[in-house]
Amino acid sequence: LSLALIVDPVSSQCTVCADGSQISLPDKMLTVPGYPPQSCSFVDASLMFLLPNETSPECGMVQSLGSICGCSVPEDSCSLCPNGNTVKRPENELPFLADLFLGFVPTCELAQAYLLSTSKSEDDLCSSSQIYMSDYCGCNEEEDNVFLEFDEPSEEPCLLCPDGASPSLPSSTIDAPNVPFQTCNQLEQALALLLGQGSEQCSLLSSTFAYYCGCNMPDTSCSLCRDGSPAVWPERTVAVLRESFGGLEPTCSLVESVVASYDVASDDCANAQLLGSMCGCPARERHCQICDGESIPLSFYDTPIPQMEPFVGVLPTCEDATYIQLQLDRDDIVCHGAKFGSHLCGCNDGVYSYLDADTTPK
Image (cartoon, rainbow, N blue to C red):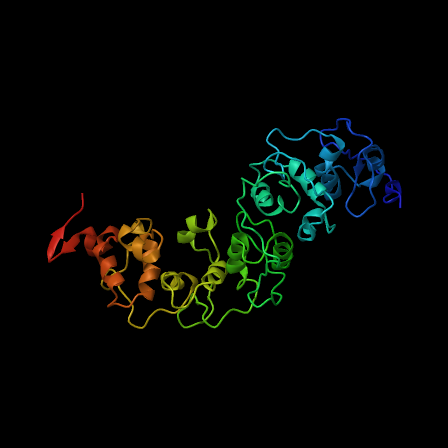
């Protein structure tokens, strides 16, 4: 099938090079997603007949591959190989990137060309592609991978679900920093293709997303809600965990998934459950009241409480404390410790009380 016969001629012209310049490698072969390989000169000459207009997604896709034909790239362009090498396995396929390539399964060569059309600072795609795909695409076949420090992969492919089954929610959308996979189905494909079972990266990704993607979890798995019920507000974000999630405010459903990788008897599980009310988990019957029955004034919501950080694992604000107190028993030592900092949240009119002596902080 000739490219020139795909679409009727139109007035707006698309060119291989986004800036309209002439290609410098006319004889190089270019694969337009969905069609047989053709020379760059043939593709460039055919584009005036091929695409409806120069702003169409199809034109943008061809131009994103322009570096194969010698088109210029941004000064801070991203390279799939962190060391700047050319991929040594250009024919390796990347099926989990099909959505990015309009449904076409790209090769490492196409992925490399696509990344060269993007900026290093544009988004997380550059760094995440280097982390997960550079070894598979042969960036470091002749030298040690000092950039990634990958674990020695096992013979077995990485599994998303602990029991080896497929996730029951394959279409669930993934939105996390440094994770270039958009759905659970893409993640499952990528893990099996790129990582070995038992590697650090495999363990990190599977423990983070297994529950979220609908995998069956062990009986000893931790639940964000103490009573085992699901989060009432799965789409709500948990701002206090922003730093723990690389700058992203995770949703309650993502927090639930991470917590499910903890053992129910672990300290990590206990600390995570203190945040449960932020996602709608029911409060303890005899829960802590940091202000002894008073409400924390709204004007103090952004004030941090360092006294609670050792127990929660993150530095909470007074607003966070309004939820955390609901998961603490009123006789818990953490509840008593939080009360020592309650004046920071405006309790007792902002006066620190110790052994019946009131002190106003200056």
